[in-house]
Image 1 (cartoon, rainbow, N blue to C red):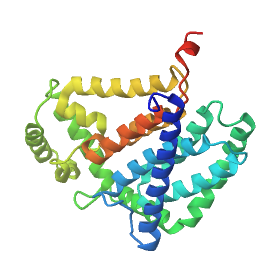
Image 2: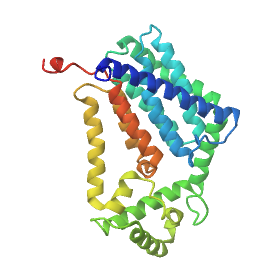
Image 3: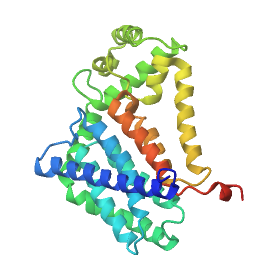
Image 4: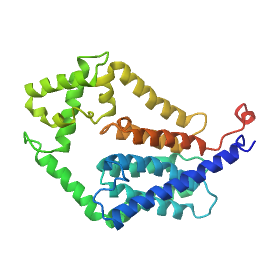
Length: 302
Protein backbone atom coordinates (compact mmCIF):
# COMPACT_ATOMS: atom_id res chain seq x y z
CA UNK A 1 0.00 0.00 0.00
CA UNK A 2 2.87 2.36 0.86
CA UNK A 3 4.63 1.60 -2.44
CA UNK A 4 1.44 2.51 -4.31
CA UNK A 5 1.32 5.96 -2.72
CA UNK A 6 2.61 8.37 -5.36
CA UNK A 7 3.55 11.05 -2.88
CA UNK A 8 5.67 8.62 -0.85
CA UNK A 9 7.40 7.34 -4.00
CA UNK A 10 8.16 10.88 -5.11
CA UNK A 11 9.50 11.83 -1.67
CA UNK A 12 11.70 8.73 -1.51
CA UNK A 13 13.08 9.45 -4.98
CA UNK A 14 13.89 13.06 -4.02
CA UNK A 15 15.71 11.99 -0.86
CA UNK A 16 17.65 9.30 -2.75
CA UNK A 17 18.65 11.81 -5.45
CA UNK A 18 19.85 14.34 -2.85
CA UNK A 19 21.85 11.74 -0.91
CA UNK A 20 23.43 10.46 -4.13
CA UNK A 21 24.29 13.99 -5.21
CA UNK A 22 25.90 14.80 -1.87
CA UNK A 23 27.92 11.57 -1.93
CA UNK A 24 29.14 11.93 -5.53
CA UNK A 25 30.15 15.58 -5.13
CA UNK A 26 31.82 14.99 -1.77
CA UNK A 27 33.89 12.16 -3.24
CA UNK A 28 34.81 14.23 -6.30
CA UNK A 29 35.96 17.13 -4.09
CA UNK A 30 37.90 14.68 -1.92
CA UNK A 31 39.71 13.28 -4.96
CA UNK A 32 40.35 16.63 -6.58
CA UNK A 33 41.37 18.71 -3.56
CA UNK A 34 42.48 16.38 -0.75
CA UNK A 35 44.14 13.74 -2.96
CA UNK A 36 45.13 16.42 -5.53
CA UNK A 37 44.29 14.18 -8.49
CA UNK A 38 44.88 16.04 -11.76
CA UNK A 39 41.56 14.99 -13.29
CA UNK A 40 38.89 13.45 -11.06
CA UNK A 41 37.78 10.02 -12.30
CA UNK A 42 35.53 8.74 -9.44
CA UNK A 43 37.34 5.37 -9.68
CA UNK A 44 36.39 5.00 -13.34
CA UNK A 45 38.99 4.62 -16.04
CA UNK A 46 38.30 7.97 -17.74
CA UNK A 47 37.77 11.48 -16.41
CA UNK A 48 35.34 12.20 -19.26
CA UNK A 49 33.04 9.39 -18.12
CA UNK A 50 33.19 10.80 -14.60
CA UNK A 51 32.21 14.24 -15.97
CA UNK A 52 29.17 12.81 -17.77
CA UNK A 53 28.10 10.86 -14.69
CA UNK A 54 28.58 13.88 -12.43
CA UNK A 55 26.52 16.00 -14.84
CA UNK A 56 23.61 13.54 -14.90
CA UNK A 57 23.66 13.11 -11.12
CA UNK A 58 23.90 16.84 -10.44
CA UNK A 59 21.09 17.85 -12.78
CA UNK A 60 18.72 15.57 -10.88
CA UNK A 61 20.33 16.56 -7.57
CA UNK A 62 19.76 20.30 -8.04
CA UNK A 63 16.18 19.80 -9.19
CA UNK A 64 15.44 17.52 -6.22
CA UNK A 65 17.00 19.90 -3.69
CA UNK A 66 14.89 22.78 -4.99
CA UNK A 67 11.75 20.73 -4.44
CA UNK A 68 12.21 20.99 -0.68
CA UNK A 69 10.10 23.69 0.91
CA UNK A 70 12.37 26.58 1.85
CA UNK A 71 12.29 30.35 1.58
CA UNK A 72 15.95 30.49 0.60
CA UNK A 73 15.91 28.72 -2.75
CA UNK A 74 18.02 31.40 -4.43
CA UNK A 75 20.84 30.96 -1.91
CA UNK A 76 20.43 27.18 -1.99
CA UNK A 77 20.73 27.19 -5.76
CA UNK A 78 23.80 29.43 -5.64
CA UNK A 79 25.54 27.11 -3.20
CA UNK A 80 24.62 23.96 -5.13
CA UNK A 81 25.69 25.42 -8.45
CA UNK A 82 29.09 26.53 -7.19
CA UNK A 83 29.79 23.14 -5.60
CA UNK A 84 28.49 21.02 -8.47
CA UNK A 85 30.21 23.13 -11.13
CA UNK A 86 33.43 22.85 -9.14
CA UNK A 87 33.25 19.05 -9.33
CA UNK A 88 32.70 19.27 -13.08
CA UNK A 89 35.77 21.50 -13.39
CA UNK A 90 37.79 19.00 -11.34
CA UNK A 91 37.23 16.39 -14.05
CA UNK A 92 39.01 18.63 -16.54
CA UNK A 93 36.50 17.77 -19.27
CA UNK A 94 36.12 20.81 -21.55
CA UNK A 95 32.76 19.78 -23.01
CA UNK A 96 31.27 19.45 -19.52
CA UNK A 97 32.75 22.77 -18.36
CA UNK A 98 31.02 24.55 -21.22
CA UNK A 99 27.75 22.60 -21.26
CA UNK A 100 26.94 22.23 -17.55
CA UNK A 101 26.13 25.92 -16.79
CA UNK A 102 23.90 26.08 -19.88
CA UNK A 103 22.08 22.89 -18.89
CA UNK A 104 21.48 24.18 -15.37
CA UNK A 105 20.20 27.49 -16.73
CA UNK A 106 17.80 25.67 -19.08
CA UNK A 107 16.57 23.60 -16.15
CA UNK A 108 15.91 26.70 -14.04
CA UNK A 109 14.07 28.55 -16.80
CA UNK A 110 12.06 25.47 -17.75
CA UNK A 111 11.07 24.61 -14.17
CA UNK A 112 7.39 25.13 -13.43
CA UNK A 113 5.73 25.93 -10.08
CA UNK A 114 8.93 25.34 -8.06
CA UNK A 115 10.84 28.58 -8.55
CA UNK A 116 8.99 31.89 -8.57
CA UNK A 117 9.33 34.11 -11.61
CA UNK A 118 11.22 36.81 -9.69
CA UNK A 119 13.65 34.18 -8.42
CA UNK A 120 14.21 32.91 -11.97
CA UNK A 121 15.15 36.43 -13.02
CA UNK A 122 17.57 36.70 -10.09
CA UNK A 123 19.16 33.34 -10.89
CA UNK A 124 19.42 34.17 -14.58
CA UNK A 125 21.26 37.42 -13.88
CA UNK A 126 23.38 35.92 -11.09
CA UNK A 127 24.60 32.91 -13.08
CA UNK A 128 27.53 34.78 -14.74
CA UNK A 129 28.72 35.84 -11.27
CA UNK A 130 28.46 32.28 -10.00
CA UNK A 131 30.48 31.13 -13.03
CA UNK A 132 33.19 33.67 -12.23
CA UNK A 133 33.34 32.59 -8.58
CA UNK A 134 33.65 28.92 -9.55
CA UNK A 135 36.22 29.66 -12.26
CA UNK A 136 38.40 31.77 -9.95
CA UNK A 137 38.46 29.02 -7.36
CA UNK A 138 39.88 26.56 -9.90
CA UNK A 139 41.62 28.98 -12.24
CA UNK A 140 44.75 26.88 -12.66
CA UNK A 141 42.85 23.79 -13.79
CA UNK A 142 40.80 25.77 -16.31
CA UNK A 143 43.87 27.51 -17.68
CA UNK A 144 45.59 24.15 -18.13
CA UNK A 145 42.73 22.80 -20.23
CA UNK A 146 42.55 26.04 -22.26
CA UNK A 147 46.27 25.84 -22.90
CA UNK A 148 45.91 22.22 -24.06
CA UNK A 149 43.21 23.29 -26.49
CA UNK A 150 45.34 26.14 -27.85
CA UNK A 151 48.24 23.75 -28.30
CA UNK A 152 46.02 21.33 -30.22
CA UNK A 153 44.94 24.19 -32.50
CA UNK A 154 48.55 25.25 -33.06
CA UNK A 155 49.60 21.68 -33.94
CA UNK A 156 46.79 21.00 -36.40
CA UNK A 157 49.24 21.04 -39.31
CA UNK A 158 51.41 18.33 -37.74
CA UNK A 159 51.18 14.83 -39.21
CA UNK A 160 52.12 12.98 -36.04
CA UNK A 161 51.86 13.19 -32.30
CA UNK A 162 48.94 13.18 -29.85
CA UNK A 163 46.25 15.75 -30.64
CA UNK A 164 42.73 15.26 -29.27
CA UNK A 165 41.23 17.80 -31.68
CA UNK A 166 42.82 16.23 -34.77
CA UNK A 167 41.86 12.77 -33.51
CA UNK A 168 38.19 13.73 -33.18
CA UNK A 169 38.06 15.33 -36.63
CA UNK A 170 39.82 12.31 -38.13
CA UNK A 171 37.48 9.87 -36.40
CA UNK A 172 34.41 11.69 -37.65
CA UNK A 173 35.74 11.62 -41.23
CA UNK A 174 36.54 7.91 -40.95
CA UNK A 175 33.13 7.16 -39.46
CA UNK A 176 31.30 8.97 -42.27
CA UNK A 177 33.30 7.26 -45.01
CA UNK A 178 33.13 3.75 -43.56
CA UNK A 179 29.44 4.14 -42.68
CA UNK A 180 28.59 5.38 -46.17
CA UNK A 181 30.00 2.18 -47.64
CA UNK A 182 27.85 -0.03 -45.38
CA UNK A 183 24.45 1.61 -44.89
CA UNK A 184 22.99 -1.62 -43.51
CA UNK A 185 25.69 -1.81 -40.86
CA UNK A 186 28.80 -3.92 -40.38
CA UNK A 187 30.99 -5.40 -37.67
CA UNK A 188 33.58 -3.41 -35.78
CA UNK A 189 36.26 -5.60 -37.33
CA UNK A 190 35.08 -4.83 -40.86
CA UNK A 191 34.95 -1.12 -40.05
CA UNK A 192 38.47 -1.33 -38.67
CA UNK A 193 39.81 -2.92 -41.84
CA UNK A 194 38.20 -0.24 -44.01
CA UNK A 195 39.49 2.47 -41.71
CA UNK A 196 43.05 1.08 -41.87
CA UNK A 197 42.95 1.16 -45.66
CA UNK A 198 41.49 4.67 -45.61
CA UNK A 199 44.22 5.98 -43.32
CA UNK A 200 46.91 4.50 -45.58
CA UNK A 201 45.38 6.36 -48.51
CA UNK A 202 44.98 9.58 -46.50
CA UNK A 203 47.80 9.87 -43.90
CA UNK A 204 46.24 13.08 -42.61
CA UNK A 205 43.67 10.89 -40.84
CA UNK A 206 46.38 9.42 -38.60
CA UNK A 207 44.59 10.76 -35.51
CA UNK A 208 41.90 8.07 -35.79
CA UNK A 209 44.41 5.20 -35.82
CA UNK A 210 44.66 4.55 -32.08
CA UNK A 211 40.87 4.66 -31.59
CA UNK A 212 39.87 2.13 -34.25
CA UNK A 213 39.46 -0.59 -31.63
CA UNK A 214 37.47 1.71 -29.33
CA UNK A 215 34.89 4.09 -30.85
CA UNK A 216 34.60 7.16 -33.06
CA UNK A 217 33.95 9.72 -30.28
CA UNK A 218 30.57 10.73 -31.69
CA UNK A 219 27.41 8.88 -30.67
CA UNK A 220 25.57 9.40 -33.94
CA UNK A 221 28.53 8.65 -36.21
CA UNK A 222 29.49 5.62 -34.13
CA UNK A 223 26.02 4.21 -34.70
CA UNK A 224 26.17 5.11 -38.38
CA UNK A 225 29.52 3.39 -38.94
CA UNK A 226 28.53 0.19 -37.12
CA UNK A 227 24.72 -0.10 -37.26
CA UNK A 228 24.09 1.87 -40.43
CA UNK A 229 20.99 3.94 -41.06
CA UNK A 230 18.93 1.86 -38.63
CA UNK A 231 21.30 2.80 -35.82
CA UNK A 232 21.04 6.50 -36.68
CA UNK A 233 17.25 6.37 -36.80
CA UNK A 234 17.06 4.48 -33.50
CA UNK A 235 19.34 6.93 -31.70
CA UNK A 236 17.51 9.94 -33.14
CA UNK A 237 14.21 8.39 -31.98
CA UNK A 238 15.62 8.06 -28.46
CA UNK A 239 16.73 11.68 -28.40
CA UNK A 240 13.41 12.95 -29.74
CA UNK A 241 11.40 10.80 -27.32
CA UNK A 242 13.32 12.22 -24.34
CA UNK A 243 12.68 15.79 -25.49
CA UNK A 244 9.03 15.06 -26.23
CA UNK A 245 8.45 13.38 -22.85
CA UNK A 246 10.01 16.36 -21.08
CA UNK A 247 7.13 18.50 -22.38
CA UNK A 248 4.25 16.05 -22.01
CA UNK A 249 2.16 15.27 -20.07
CA UNK A 250 3.82 17.76 -17.69
CA UNK A 251 6.88 19.95 -18.11
CA UNK A 252 9.83 18.06 -16.67
CA UNK A 253 12.88 20.30 -16.39
CA UNK A 254 15.16 17.57 -15.03
CA UNK A 255 14.32 15.18 -17.87
CA UNK A 256 14.88 17.93 -20.44
CA UNK A 257 18.30 18.87 -19.09
CA UNK A 258 19.40 15.23 -18.74
CA UNK A 259 18.22 14.50 -22.28
CA UNK A 260 20.01 17.55 -23.68
CA UNK A 261 23.21 16.60 -21.86
CA UNK A 262 23.03 13.16 -23.44
CA UNK A 263 22.75 14.78 -26.88
CA UNK A 264 25.45 17.41 -26.30
CA UNK A 265 28.01 15.00 -24.87
CA UNK A 266 27.21 12.59 -27.68
CA UNK A 267 28.70 15.10 -30.11
CA UNK A 268 32.23 14.50 -28.79
CA UNK A 269 32.03 11.09 -27.15
CA UNK A 270 30.09 7.82 -27.08
CA UNK A 271 28.32 7.59 -23.74
CA UNK A 272 26.55 4.30 -24.49
CA UNK A 273 29.95 2.64 -25.05
CA UNK A 274 30.51 2.89 -21.29
CA UNK A 275 28.52 0.52 -19.09
CA UNK A 276 28.76 2.96 -16.19
CA UNK A 277 27.68 5.92 -18.31
CA UNK A 278 24.74 4.00 -19.77
CA UNK A 279 23.58 2.79 -16.35
CA UNK A 280 23.86 6.20 -14.69
CA UNK A 281 22.02 7.97 -17.50
CA UNK A 282 19.23 5.38 -17.38
CA UNK A 283 18.94 5.95 -13.63
CA UNK A 284 19.01 9.74 -14.12
CA UNK A 285 16.14 9.48 -16.61
CA UNK A 286 14.16 7.27 -14.24
CA UNK A 287 14.71 9.58 -11.27
CA UNK A 288 13.89 12.63 -13.38
CA UNK A 289 10.45 11.11 -13.86
CA UNK A 290 10.05 9.83 -10.29
CA UNK A 291 10.79 13.17 -8.61
CA UNK A 292 8.03 14.85 -10.59
CA UNK A 293 4.69 15.30 -8.87
CA UNK A 294 2.41 12.93 -10.69
CA UNK A 295 -1.15 14.16 -11.24
CA UNK A 296 -3.99 11.98 -10.09
CA UNK A 297 -5.69 10.12 -12.98
CA UNK A 298 -8.88 12.08 -12.33
CA UNK A 299 -6.93 15.34 -12.66
CA UNK A 300 -5.44 14.25 -15.96
CA UNK A 301 -8.90 13.88 -17.48
CA UNK A 302 -9.92 17.41 -16.63
